[in-house]
Image 1 (cartoon, rainbow, N blue to C red):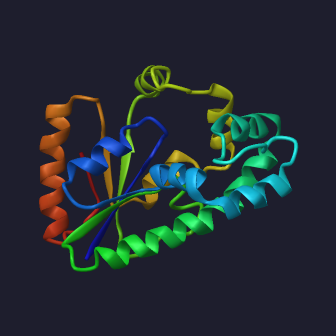
Image 2: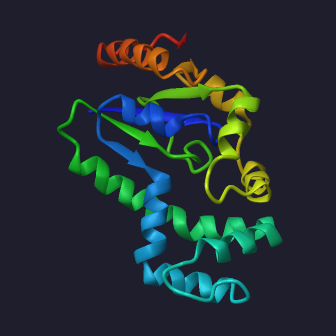
Amino acid sequence: MIRIVVVGEIGSGKSYVSKSFGFPVFDADKEVQKIYKTNRQLYLKLKKKLPNFIKSFPLNKKELSKSIIKDVKNLKIISKLVHPIVRGNMKTFLKRNVKKKAVVIDVPLYFENKIFNKNDFIIYIQAKKSEIFKRLKLRKGFNLKIYKQLKKIQLSNEYKRKKSTICLKNNFNKKRLKNTIIMIKYKILKNERSNFRY
């Protein structure tokens, strides 16, 4: 089973690229939303750590956001409790799909949380900041303060780009992007590992 990892800026099109390969996708953001809705143990731990913010179950995203805006340290507290659960869910996903040709892993903090595997095909999505912000502003519930706090705990884009196998420029032209992904998919399935850019 080949592991294809998609990394890049928030709003660069990681989810769209991940789905376009046609392989099973592990979407960490969706997993986190499920965990917030169903994991009572996590709620109790967060309520203990952040009693001034966490009031109700299922976990309320607004309450979590308020705690992060107040202090970036609270983001680290949340991450420390949430990420081991996400990692466990990812292991389950990989076991379930072990006989597939390939899977796609969309984990925003792939490098930061040391999920890195030397055999992974890592695709870095590069997009213009102006285009990214245009799309982020259209997202329901987008919060610039939260965005800035998240950026503080992330490694630089330059580091991610250098560590990636493939650099994919996303100009948000769906037809062009799909054609590029077909070419990348072909190279990955042939296990061609020379660093290349699109």
